[in-house]
Length: 294
Image (cartoon, rainbow, N blue to C red):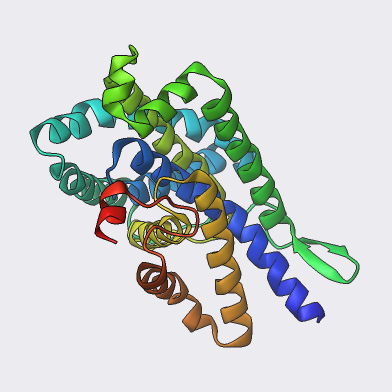
């Protein structure tokens, strides 16, 4: 029983970080209806920035989220106006190709600057844990989960209780309707894209403490993010949280009771099962055209 509880605890702690990692990509899809394949590259870029700043300053890597998040916010804002907006006005489907190209360029730049060798960020508490009632709580996972919860709460409050957040929600519901009530949709799209990339910035910092990383790691993380948002519901932030917890728990249980190698297959199995049984995801809404065909 204690092994099962230990496995569930580890899964929930990692799931909290997964939720933050996937929330940015889901926000961008919910508002702009594009699958931002560049998100994995931005995640790894943030991990490398954390690695460099940690080595240069000795600051606790989790505190560096206050630097990497605004840096990636600016990167996201510039990326939207330079690349994404232009591709969307030409052909909406080109945005997907553009984001795929961006992730290739990002990985290439990272490899040129930092090389292709695996790196990791290992603060003093990386191998320590708390012990409560015979259960072990790894300090790095606990701290990372707490930071992820704070960032996600801040994102939720911004979306629910600010003018920008209400504009983002109105645009996500209907961009034409938003224009009719005076919302500058172009600026809202840019803000949503920048916020999504900023969330990847925060997530990349947390992941750098939990996992080794290299430029090609972007491919793994983009697959995991897609699995989470398909499972939880594309465009649903609560769905991101639920999907992240389910996948992290499934990975943890699979690794403990079946084999660690099988854990990597869990996200892709989840995509297949959800697409067959509930294409809109656990908390996603069915599109009007889908309902008309049902």
